Amino acid sequence: MTGPTAPPEAAPGTGPAAAAEDGLPSFAPAARLEQELGCPFDPDTGMSLARGVRADDREAEPTEAYEAAWAAGLHARLVPAEEGGSLTSFESLLALVRAASRRDAAVSVGLGSTLLATLPVWIWGEEAQRRRVAELALGRAWGTAGISEEAAGSDLLATGTRAVPVDGGYLLNGEKWLVGNGRRSSFATVLAASEPSFGLFLLDFEDPAVTGVRRLAKVPTHGLRGHDLSGFALSGCRVGEEAVIGRRGRGIEMVSGMLQFTRTLVGGSALGSADTALRIALRHARGRILYGAPATHLAPVRGLLARGFADLLVAECTALAAARGLDVARQRMPLWSAVAKYVVPQFAVDSVAACGEVLSARAYLREGAGAGAFQKIVRDLAITPVFEGTQLVQLDTVRAQLASAARRRSPARAELPLPLLFGFGEEPASPSLRAQRPALTHGGADEVTGCLDEAVDALHEEPRLAALAHTLRTVRDQVRAEFAALGTDRGAPAYEAARRHCLVHAGACCLHTWLQRRRALGPLAADPAWLSVALRRVLERLGRPAGADLEAEDRLVRHLTELDDDDRALSLIPLRLAPQHREAGPVRTKERP
Image (cartoon, rainbow, N blue to C red):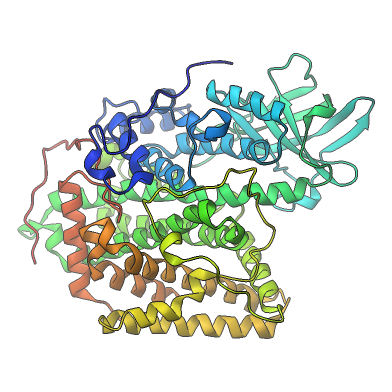
């Protein structure tokens, strides 16, 4: 399977999205993609909400959306630059995933399944393996990660697929189920029990010598109906020695490492879905006249919009820090990727729930607001907390990492400067995947929560924010003490402590973002109103409610309407979008101060 690669990109700071790119080169590719794909509310674009709803109703692949994504070169973003593609940083890739998911999460999930299949090849594969997979991926081929099995669930050690050594190679037998792109894939990376332990194998389905493969039926789902979630069975599938990826017996280790990347990037799908849901709810509320005025003049509606927007911003800060961690702090990702995977989808789900309350009965209509896309977004988003490991799997990972850190004889030293870790938009010097491979433990240090003390000190001129940050730090200290006492215990208190650590991490990401980047990112980021509401949302979930900041909520809603009016992303990142399509013309309702 061959095809054209991505078109050459314009230099940062040029082209129609230059205003959004100045000083923020990491987000330049997403700004250009937004211009190329057009507004998702425009029914005539290839990745429009309306087309996505129609394909979803038929449970059909969104072929026009895939064509638009390929034409924009998204497939090339899955291939590192050193392998002939255009993947240069994971911060950039997260923004691209979010842009695609604003339109149809099925597209980003399909590409994400391919990325999961390619990652072990980029990291541990031999030159010939990398060359072949790059050829396939750049030619628009789908990949699948053959990890999941019906009987094994999330227990990788229960994998039933076997790779039996034979003369010159292996015979593979087993069945992979609930894997993305299972029916349409051209290649697969397969986890199988072997000698001396589990191994990863590369299967090239386009190679005529690869036989004994049977594709399984697509599994009907409530959400992501256009995504190929299926599987394949292997019966006497013979592969040569060259199919082995990396060192024999390291399959579980490699799967754990590659999941650190995809767990982080799932956050882009959640952010994109919540972004569109919030825009649908905002536009409905601004155009809906109740009691003689737009619904946005009603305090409960404004509160829902503000809190939904704040939840989205908490998720954004957490996701950006994790994506940037893949570029500049890869050694911390055994912990941070699990935290982000727990936090980001959940806050996005809560944000969309608030949008549903704003829409009220119209949230259930299959026409009208957002081309009837809201329920599709709800259903598509619901799977993001499950992808790449459920919420309980993430909490167990966090628990294990923190328990290991608590057992250290002396605390690990923080090594990463916060201006680098939270330098969102500045192109990082990301090491190649092969140069800095994933670790199994985070090393005990955690700059995100560990630097809360400095963050509290830096807020001396913002006493109200300082009080919120002080409460967050208090919870952090309690969690640390609990893990020191719990040790390796896996009871309910350990999982509850892990949950609270995840929330403290999210609040710390918001604090560090405001302290490190507020002047670089624009008016919304510089306004302490968003941080006030965001921290209160985190503290409420921690059981430490601080009361509503109504003035901050009103300012946050004003920012929200200004971003929509100015055709910009609902984000701390000042990303300019393609001119926005509005069915009834631009909404310019004057907001009440």
